[in-house]
Length: 228
Image (tube, rainbow, N blue to C red):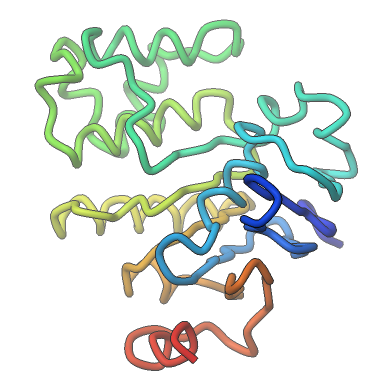
């Protein structure tokens, strides 16, 4: 049974710029779903809708049987989102950013700094640095920690490995593997081969249409599919 299911999602910017045409897909607990396509095809728009940061023009979404389009609190309870752009407060410290995201979660930041996601991703070592002093890789690690503050069962990531060094990319992939291994659901857009290799299933978004591919592909084979 699908844990998250999108049904006939539509989105347009103006009358002529149709970005999503009845996009549908589903993902089960523990699945890693990759959504691929050319730059500008609408992948970020789709992820924005799935995360609740953008509003769809039509269609429906179910998360654990609940309808977040009718009750937006479902988004904050069930879905963590790591956008491409930096969602952090640059002038605040790493610790203060974490405090903001952990606020009202009922979870212990102090404990997580010792053995939770911030510890696993190495964020605990930089608590007193302001975000504007961090490298791109550390900002991305912190963004993931913030997205997971409420311990959501679904994690959505938009190009998480873009422009990061190989060590950071591997640390993020290791964590995503552990996350799905513990039953979490990952929905990701990426051009990184390592991140795409982890996919259980892959969808192609092209000309507003989302199509499940027969099998996940990478490299030249993926380029051929996108450019076909």
